[in-house]
Length: 195
Image 1 (cartoon, rainbow, N blue to C red):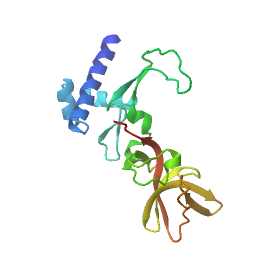
Image 2: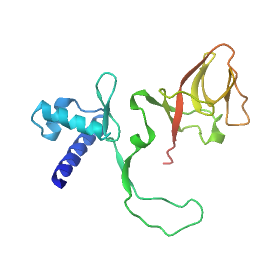
Image 3: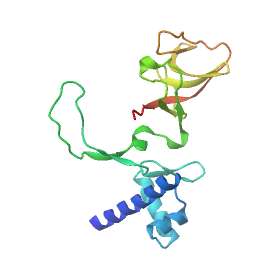
Image 4: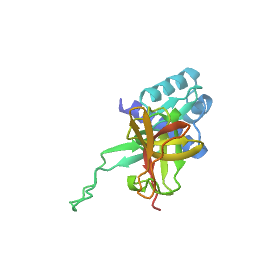
């Protein structure tokens, strides 16, 4: 059992390496080349196995897309953000940031934030937001919306039949659509790089 799981791990590493180096998933024939598999059937079985383990998925056209194969990161435990506590480093797990942040890869996109109207929600200029266009927006969600021909990111507030977009900065006023409101997606995560 250990030998087969080691072999699977190596094949995952080969595919992950290909993805990092080429910024795209390999084709079935490229998977055969990089993993040493000789038959189409063996490649098909490997792809199905990786799909069942949620390492990869297929988009609506059947192309392979990464789910958690891209760049797994070691999860070493927790850190106290209050009072200091004794530090213990222990490998708790490995986790893919893709898998952690993206639930629906084929319906997800990223945007770079400009402006400070959501600063009190912790979303600052220069941050990246991950947006899922497949989620049904609910009152209280942060959404990307086109309001009367202008794009914005705000809290969605529904009251009866009325809809308003609420900023997270007291310098800005709520927006009530005059003619048209199209919601492009729900913000599911914020990414900020410090260095």
